Length: 116
Image (cartoon, rainbow, N blue to C red; front, side, top):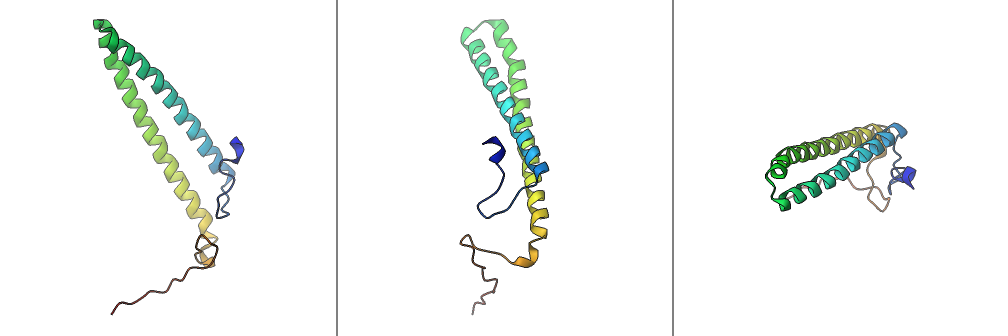
């Protein structure tokens, strides 16, 4: 099932294998960071509940690490968005003369309706 994630879309668009590999790699990185964040949050909560001064001081560093991880996830998603957009632009260049289609597969009308 893992290899089928981006094998095609409902409109029949195929994704390049290199793009697929990049997506999968990025999603694995995101999931790893989110798993790490879960552990950090658990430790932060335990330290907070303990009310021990050294544990509370340690939370400062843990929260900074958590914030940095969140920034990394945002950056990874931004890179994914850029990669996806570029791959769709490249794939649509070959289809530019085909016109546009509605979700039902019928050509859409590109006529401009004038008001007045």
